[in-house]
Amino acid sequence: MDWGMANRMAQLFKNGRCMFMPIDHGYFQGPTRKLECPAETVAPLMDYAEALFVTRGVLRSCIDPMTSKPVVLRVSGGPSVIGPDLADEGLTTAIEDVIRINASAMGLSIFVGTQYEKQSILNLAKLVNEGEKYGIPVMAVTAVGKELEKRDARYLALCCRIAAEMGARVVKTYWCENFEKVIQGCPVPVIMAGGPKVADRGVLEFVHDGMSKGAVGVNLGRNIWQHDYPVPMMRSLRAIIHENASVDEAWEMFNNLKNECV
Ligand code: 5RP
Image 1 (cartoon, helix red, strand yellow):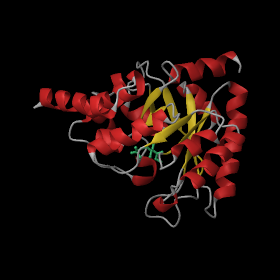
Image 2 (cartoon, protein in one colour):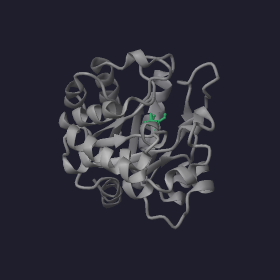
Image 3 (cartoon, rainbow, N blue to C red):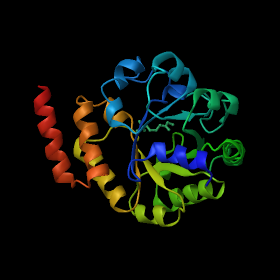
């Protein structure tokens, strides 16, 4: 790995683990609840994230360029949530803009098993070609569009392996039962995505399970910033990721921090 690539990867991880904060949802969902004003939502959470996952538009208009927080730039898009097919994505951001923004990594979705799988996988390959020229890692996102039922270990292992084979340096995927099968088949670090909001302990439980099976961290959005107590939730998840806290320890920490807020 050349120096620039290694240095950018090092910016994204602390002792090999990471907690990314995604605020990219608007690129297909519009003004998602609690992200109507991204600057306000992320302000109290920034200190607890290793990196922000964001589009160039929200970055430029809502995030202070004086920040030292690393940026994973979302560079795929096209369809909206009301359009015919969420999987019909293309590349949205020129590599010159990625470099100008000083991004630490680029993120793009692939849609395996959809009619657009080839297009999205070739998007990934092209992005890796550009990224490798300039030492910028690519994080592939294994997206499922609206078809959440596809999230089993066999399917996600297939998606993650394809992403790694195309040259993604990091893969973001959903947690699932038998998550070790996903990890075992993927030769690059795997980060867990969140998905729609689940009950508090449920988030702690799946993150703990995924970490114990070899994930290197999370890219969790709505389960944190749509929570009534986002900072306690983020800090207790952080304890699982960075301090090997058990679910019970993290839950106790959450409740203690929550009580300090009321
Ligand atoms: C959207 C994304 C998001 O970054 C990802 O879904 C994580 O956010 P959440 O935890 O809210 O699902 O890639 O396509």
